[in-house]
Image (cartoon, rainbow, N blue to C red):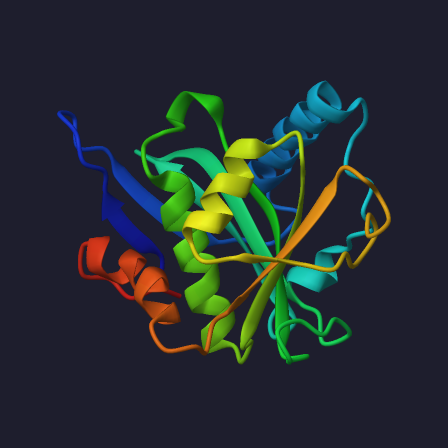
Length: 192
């Protein structure tokens, strides 16, 4: 069942986070937007090899965040038992975190990240890992505010000087408090 969360503010728009296939039209449109942002910031798209199967249960999940029915954000995770971080190989890699410019600074990114952590943890991941870049300081600030810590590089860009990798122990005491923010803010429906 999708998550429904009212956004604070005068108009009180409704945020709904819904699991969709990686090839869903809303997901594809938003992934194209984030790729265009990578081109603007880095001079080229993210060419990490990804396939739709990586985001199908039980290996992962892909989500779209809707604001008043309009697709405005994406976030996904995929299992990465080949990456050891914070002493565990029960890892889930956060991918395709993106919020459209028009709805930034509304808390949607925080809600999406909390949702990703909660669903990855429920699927058995004990550590969340992610890779971002130095030209995305707002993303780095978000992850650090959620308790992510720098780790050695992994994945496609592990040797790039522009890459920064982070991890968070989802099983640590208090770690799920941030992920449960999503539950406290929703309007009574369960996270899927």
